[in-house]
Every structure is written in structure tokens, then in C-alpha cells.
Image (spheres, rainbow, N blue to C red):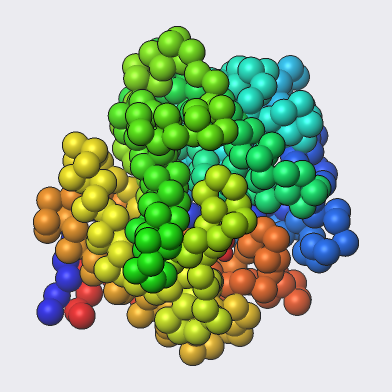
Length: 448
Ligand code: BGP
């Protein structure tokens, strides 16, 4: 059977600044919170070089071109533009992105830029992050600067990547590692998320005030959540996690409002978030033009006494062909979440902004790369299935363009369509999956 995609559907791949750029101490870039974490002895990878994309961007755009990607999602590093987060502007940082964009546009590749991919300026983490109004105002100034400088060439923008991961997997976990109590940290997570969504809405407002001819949205990590058993406790724990992960973020992003029942539950249990009427108006008046969906796999949840107030644990299996990067390979769940968004949120425009797999360490010409072809194929089939059933899915970005620095997991995880020789000279080689994807793009589909 031929799986074919409509003419308005675009194929691409995604990256994030910190995971590929390197050059963390060059040309005036300011420090981010992750720079500090990477100095800890438990984390062995070195972000100062990463893929050295900062110096090899021309070669990398050449490879994007060779793959035939129609669009490329990358992120802009806030502290290259404003080294301290606010205040002094860094012309050299702006120039790097100017050059990159020029290269992309002249090769006919449409850029989609993310303004924030987990890279909070160090100075702002230390003053309470997103729950400090200074961070919120600084972000909207940074966003405005990017729109003014690049908005004539970049038409597609995402404000934030995965607020839930930024706050629940990163902030919450880091603060708990400092032996702080979940009862203290979780309310901060909700207040941070509130500040982050205000920053998102302010960025949308300035995008529209500047009358940029394009679309702006946000990127969420979304997936169906299942209880691990049919016990009442597990069912309730799955509901709590689903409420937080999916409903909370979807409602804020697409309706510009808090989901009442969950909001009341948190107000009663953790006395957060603190929200004013003006904030609510701001969110309501500045909703996204599109929703970015990052999908890796469903979640299986059991009840636990840990992780107040969600009180859940996530079940994981050993990595295998059917359990990539700690998530079960389950393309049908991509279809399910897409249809849920379509039904419950008035059929928004959706871009799959990340989908991909790592099976751990992988050599060049490895059978794991064959598994990647199978993974992408099965997921794309479900994307088509959702389109056929009415979901407005218009783009698909593979995570990721090239093997990179996978945060705390370092260089061991390989998600790339392009192999990077980290043990040697960082030479890039297009993998078989990259060649296969290239054919898919050319043929606007594949046989299944
Ligand atoms: C997403 C992030 C990416 C990337 C990807 C894979 O959450 O936006 O930056 O890291 O996940 O990561 P993981 O191996 O943690 O699933």
C-alpha cells in the first residue's frame, strides 16, 4: 500500500542549539544553567564542542540540502544574543544566526526557529527562573529582538520547547537532587510554568504587533498515559499524570486558559499557581497559530508515594527494538494523541516537531539504523492515518538531523539521520535512514 502525503505537507528534521553548536565560550556567549550542570563530575560529556556546528554550519546546511529536507527546525541560543539574559546585545551572536539563515534560505530550506530549548540564562535560574518577572520581561525583549532581526526571513517560530520537560524533568529533578522537598518544589514548578506561559503570550503579542508575515506556536511533549494495571490507585495516578502532562499544557497553549478542575485541585493541594486576571487576559488574547507536538511513546504509570502531588512512577523496560530511548515504540499512540488534540481543541494546525528514536550506542552501518527506518515509517503511516481522519497535521520533523549531545545522556544516545564521528574528527556521514528519508521526501511517501 502506498502511503502518500498531501502537497501542503512538509518534511524536515530538528535540532537544538545546545545539543549541536558547541563554541559555548566563544564570541561573547553568556552562560546557561546547563553549563553549570555539565561541570558536575557525574556528567561526562563536553558541551564546549558538541558537534561543532557553530563552525561547521555551512557544511551542515549542505547536508540538509543533500537530504532534500524542505524545512529545518533549529533553536536560537538566548545567551548568544543577550549574554546576561537582558541588557547588552551581542552583535556576534546575531551574526551567527544571520549567516545560518542566509545559508538555509539560499538553499531553499524553510527555517522554523525555536526561541528557547531548555537554555535558561544562568543569571535567571539563580533569581528564581520563570517565576521572576525579570525573566519573563527579558524573554519577551529577546523574542522581539529576534523577530525584528530575522522576521523578514524566518516565517515560522516556536516560543518554547517542551515546558513540561523544562520544569518537571529538569527543574523539579535538579531541585530535588539538592535534597529539597517535593512539597516545596512542585508549587515552584507550577509558578514557573505560569511565568513561562506569560512569556510565551508576550512573545506572540510582539510577533503580532510587529505584523510579521508568518506563524507562531509552542512545542509540547504529548503522549497517551496508561495505568499499568486496572487497580483504582493506578488508574487515578495515570489520570493525575495525564492531567498535568497533557491537559494542563494543551489547555494553556490552545485555549489560553487553565483547565478548571485541575487548577482547583492544585490550588487546594499546593496553593499554586498564583494567577491574576491580567495574566488570564494575556493568555487568552495571545493563542498559538499552530501546535508543535513532540512524540516519542506512551507512558505507563503506577501509583507511588513519591513525586508529590502526582504520586506516580513511570514504568520502563530495558531498551530493545520495541523500547527505544525508554519509551515503548507505539505509533498507534501518536495517532491517538493527534486525534485527541483534533477533537478536544477545535482542530488546530499541528506540526510534529520531534519524532525519532535512539537504541543506545550505534556504529556507522548498524542494524539499529534499519530499526530507525522502520520506526519512522510506522510513525509516518500513523500521521497519514490522522490526516485522513481529519487532523490538520502539516509538517513532520525527525529528531534529529545528526547524532548530538543528548543532554545528561551525553553522546551515547544516537538519534541522528547523520552519523557524527565523536571519537575522531566529527566527520559527518549520512546514514542509510537519512538516504531512505530523502527518498520519502522525493516521492512524497513510501510503500508500506
Ligand atoms: C526531547 C528534547 C530533545 C531531545 C529528545 C530526545 O525531549 O526536546 O532536545 O533530547 O527529547 O531526548 P530523550 O533521549 O531524553 O528522550
